[in-house]
Image (cartoon, rainbow, N blue to C red):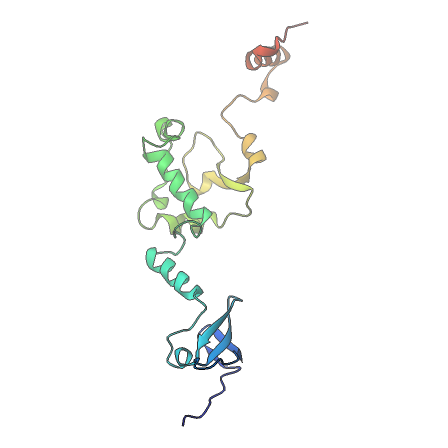
Length: 194
């Protein structure tokens, strides 16, 4: 007859044993484990001892993400990072004529710097730009006629980006030009000069 080995308090990979599940008739011994990700799971005794189970399943996801990409940021949605998606979008806008934004980017001659292209492009982009500061930020070119490069890009809010457009800014006009521009922009309101 085998002796019972209490595993409570022991750690196996990412799992820490916190208790035993009450046994049912003819059932294998199962341990209640707390994973380092915070999730609890039930693991069969022999799977802990022989190393077959070392996490609640989260380690499998992490390893699959690492195996699917060189840098771990390009997994399938929802695991794909915003930074990676942004990088791919700027490349598509500048170099893919079938992209909906190509006319306003690549069609105007806007390019992505050499450092941000190729196999080492995304890690260089991430190194230069850093992570997105918040959900309200997106990538913005400081000079709208300039290329995508570290000195010309920043993470900006929508409000900051709206102040940085190719359209003429109204504050740069004289009174007569301002009135003319207002008429031009809002013909449906029938604005007339006094």
